[in-house]
Length: 112
Image (tube, rainbow, N blue to C red; front, top):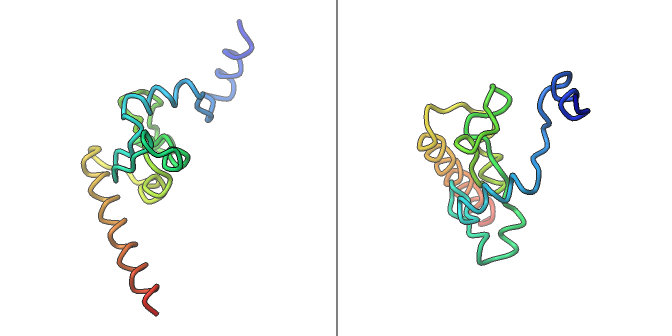
């Protein structure tokens, strides 16, 4: 038995996602945040803040399978957090509402 398989059996799956795995998700999603639409394909600086989000969080048993992974910018990924949603559409609605709430707070605070 390979050491990698033995480690997986003893300690569970690795928390780290390989670059190849991440690039498959980025490619499928056209290097765009699936929540807010941030374009990482045409703007390198935007690509630097893209992450992979588990729609159903790993902390709550979500699998590392392509149908549970989406490209997300760091702010959207943080806003979604470990919340559980019935669908991706509900998660997206939550994140966009939270972004608007934070944007409103930002506008209020920067006026002072």
